[in-house]
Figure 1 (cartoon, protein in one colour):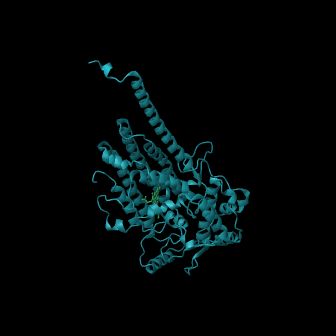
Figure 2: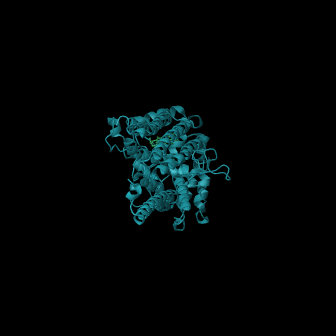
Figure 3: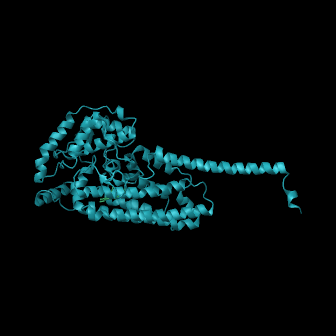
Length: 476
Ligand code: HEM
């Protein structure tokens, strides 16, 4: 049989050939266009830098002259004010300075922030300055002892709420203010990196505080490569060919090793940040409204209607967008919506399931939009690994690395918060501090230890760890 005779006549054959070539060209074009679109969106629209991730690529600029009084008040307070309940001699000596500082803020006019509204970096700087001022203001006040709510003056609250609305972020000190927007390269001629970073504002002025921020920043910077892996995955035009499957497999294994490095970073905080200093001298500055429980004094934002409805918890690495991106990519079900094994324990069910979702309200709006964008990607890597047996182990490796990270993090949080909460402060007279502590726990009926944001800590962190473990495919 003559094969040539079986082929369509030449014009028809060429038409078919061209149609095929055109459709191949179109699909490549479409895939490239989609990739370019996704990359463009992630880098510009979501305010993510290809080298520094969620950090701005440069130090935030100072505010224009109109806002000098905000900038100077922050420079004045930086590391110099004392916690209001610090009854050491040097802290008591500094109280008049704190009182004068606070009363000048109360006397300030309310500045209009309209001129900042078209400049993202200036808006971020304004949020950073005002949010730090609020926490300095609140926590440097000596306790009144009458349980009254704390009034934050309108010279801070009105502009803070205005810039927060533009940025889509909670009007309070966040992870972005303490870490992402609070640093600069030591050597400005070199890019920001884990070894070329220093922090601008400190509450306690201690090296321990700076080292705590450095650990968070190192984890965040290490996460930039994770973002690249996630973006690569989302840009894959197809999931059917062998080359793609082996790339996904390699990337999942790479992800597991980066997560392992982040666990090491979390552990590395131990020799450089003393748990006692952290718990008694640093952490109290972070506390947000109602951090000490439902009956503790709340913050009232003067001049803001329905101020009680604002998100006013303290900063937490739970607000790190990198960690959320990882959770979304690996499909960790913190809200216990999926049926996975083993079933959640009673303690898991009682823990605060909405914590991670709530923490997103404390992220810059564009970073939250990036997470929303990730959450609607057409093919989840977990589903892909479920359908392709060779991907199951690499996927499980990444999930188990994240589970180990959460185990490691629980150890640190337990040492720095739970254990320390049972100790007495080294400040002032040890006997009176111990008596005060006993009095406090008696009055509160042995309250559970709460996290920075007022959460029951152990149950919360265990629930996150168990939700992570439940994503593995081997048992599911
Ligand atoms: C001294 C070091 C640290 C302590 C004492 C600590 C403490 C805590 C506490 C108390 C929470 C509960 C939520 C809250 O109330 O804020 C928390 C949550 C969290 N922390 Fe840390 N943390 C430390 C370092 C880090 C570092 C370096 C990272 C970087 C990855 C990190 C990541 C997280 C995440 C992602 C959460 C949300 C809960 C979860 O995902 O399991 N923490 N941390």
